[in-house]
Image (cartoon, rainbow, N blue to C red; front, side, top):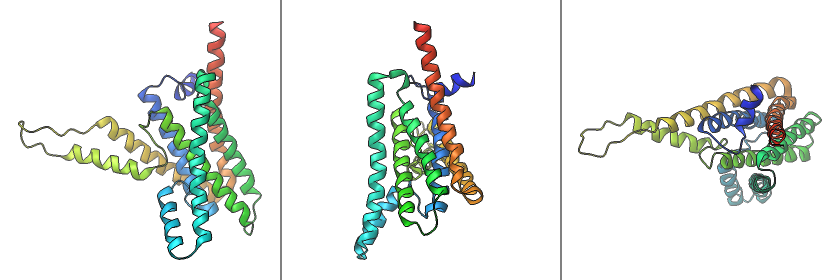
Length: 248
């Protein structure tokens, strides 16, 4: 059943298949938010390396205000990850069947808020632009920490630089020509190669979808993403209630 499949994606007991499917779905969301968010607020909100480097550049150029803005965005990303850690650990101890549900619900609510704030935003309202930027950075940190916790740090959905690095390493091992049996054989981990390639592709397709959505529909394009996360969380809740009913 679809409910069982969706609930499996966020179940406390994990499988490699569930990790890959959930990671691909969240990578799609991250790509859509990152690319679409750039069209909305003029900044990539998952690119923490760029923000930290940009802050250093702005300090060197004497643009302290811009440097502070970049560092606040980084802090928002970190606080998103902190929030995930707090919610996951609390839920794991008190509601183990729904360990990851609160984080998914919060992300869905924040995306809904992002769409509503943005749809009412005028171009000259700089305060709201700053707010939406921080909101997206927070969501990116929230989501990346969530999939990191779920997959035990095997999968990340916003850090494409790391994904491409790992993909390149595995491709290098795959193409390596082992010259003799007396030497240690170099072998590619085809499972990891498939995971990294899938996540990069999902991020790219999500980015394309998000950019087209924001271009033609504006901030309202975040609503399908919020709805998908909400359905994922509700499936996990329903599965948990069914299990409780069966146990009783």
